[in-house]
Image (cartoon, rainbow, N blue to C red; front, side, top):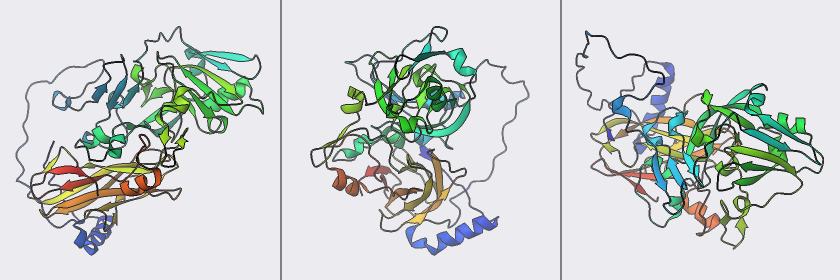
Length: 419
């Protein structure tokens, strides 16, 4: 992607004037709006005298935009096992289109007949309830904008050498959507909960037998049995006809293709509870059931795969999120982390949702290192890579939330570095 962003930042509003003063006070960082980046004269737009194309039953991207796709990494030894990444570096805003939501499948996408499907809820004793899809649609629905992030997102940054890949290919196992469904607490209370019930065992219909354990307190708090994603029925790869959406918690517990929900006094300790998504700490003890995703941010533009074609003004853009609450602040550095300035957070800033940040940046042609770090409303600040490795050791595979750095060289080329 060639960057030719020659956007102006005119001081036409009081807010912009205030912002520009703050940039100018920090001019030593290169984080300011300091002139025009070579805007060319406007050309007369083309016109058409004939009628355009007709209607379609389901809209598709423009032909020129169909290169924006999910990149896939599949395991040839296991049918349907692998991932596909959301191209974060090619998207804007905070809502991920359904067709670009990341995928993580352990044994492929099951084909489920919605007329034959039902959700079994096993309560204490011998009581159980079964809900058809039509039954669930009769319940009050609620919508929430939330991110879902795979526990393995960004795990290549644990490697000793930085991998040269686009932002979405390093960090794209996270997506943000509006999810609509039935509050799980409603179904559990209808089935009946005893004082001995401390855990919920959620079982999926895919061939890999995904089964996970969730604390009952979380299930009664804010978990959804989701039926819709961004206003339309769930797509097959994202859990059709029903899935769990567990706000702020790692992707594996957001179980797709739900089969059953069972109350229990103890966790099941399935392989997805105990082996997968487990991190070996530096003291030799394995950390299981991490659940809550840490505070995190990434710069999506400029980033690897893009190039600055001229000196001048650009906009540094990115995303931040936290499993513990809202994003409080995002800070940017253009000098490898020695100095930091606050970025602008795009409203609305929502609880456990992707937050877009932006800041004008003047590139003067010198080599620089761009970094972002986020702080959430729980007070946690995104750690550096060194801080993360110091705390957890070198044998960890999942749950990477360290700061990512992009180096811009004098030719405008961008690379992934550890800084």
